[in-house]
Amino acid sequence: MSTYSISVEGTSNPAIKKFQADQFLVNHNSYEFKNIDEAANSPLAQQLFYLPFVKTVYITQNFVAIEKYNIVEWIDVQQEVANQIEDYLNDNGLVIIEDVAAKKIPVTVYAESTPNPSTLKFVANKKLVTTAFEFKSIDDTANAPMAKALFHLPYVKEVFFDENYISVQKYDVAEWDEVVTETREFIRDYIQDGKEIVTAAQLKTPQQAEAIAEEKFETLDDISKEIVNIIEEYVKPAVASDGGNIMFKNYDPKTQNVSVILQGACSGCPSSTFTLKNGIENMLKQMLPGKINMVEAING
View 1 (cartoon, rainbow, N blue to C red):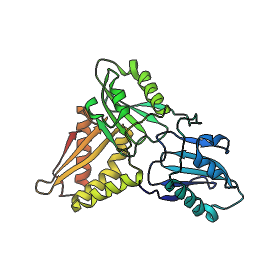
View 2 (tube, rainbow, N blue to C red):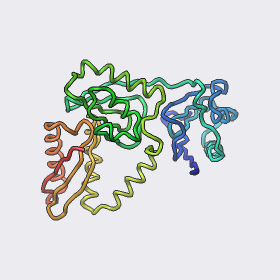
View 3 (cartoon, helix red, strand yellow):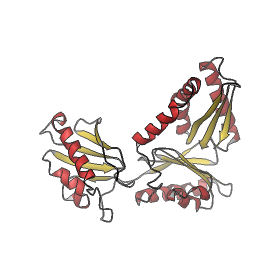
View 4 (spheres, rainbow, N blue to C red):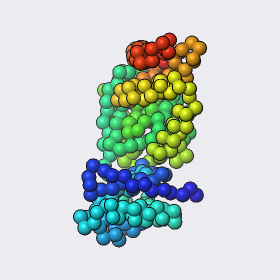
């Protein structure tokens, strides 16, 4: 069994500290406990409430947040708390007893339009995954129970997960105004019920995802690194806001051609693909003069 490591992070509230784990602690649910009685289904939270300064314990996927009373300063106790959580987890202590009714944080999901009229973006008020996943058909969903469930809706053509949203592309058999409520409620209820979104084997903590990305980045040539940095800083945020994703595929130094992969709402819509391709190409040519010939945008 792998060993847990806990790091301490501040928050916007000086009374609250986050104790970040390098592995997932619970399966997609979030829990909030105001006292030891409320924490009947969380042995970890009960342990923490024995510390006299602990006011509230909040447990979610890969961190524990603790709000303290003003009887101590965090600087004096935060490492002690981190060590206690780390030791508890490494002694195989239970975080949550899942079959006991818990006080869950309510899940809300709202729908957003995207540049692709066949695709809507369903945004949740909590993180769902730490890396992007794209599913072109139900055959791709062996490790993604939620995507598999969505494909059982007869109008669902493709599914894309990233961070806190799900992009769903539909067939033309239905209009979105006919099925958007059904889809939104299906997604909300699925998340609220604590069902598995992707299998544990596919889940990565933010630290693991960042380490994998960094390892891939270091294998690239210098121009490819510049291209990736430009895409990450200037293109990806805008694309994500539209329910899509863009991935650098390769750069050919001989032809100076760049290939990128479009996912989610960006994929499968000729007009948005053309617009995005031209926008990326113009940006790269301006920022890397003499190094870019053209950009090829490939639907994921």
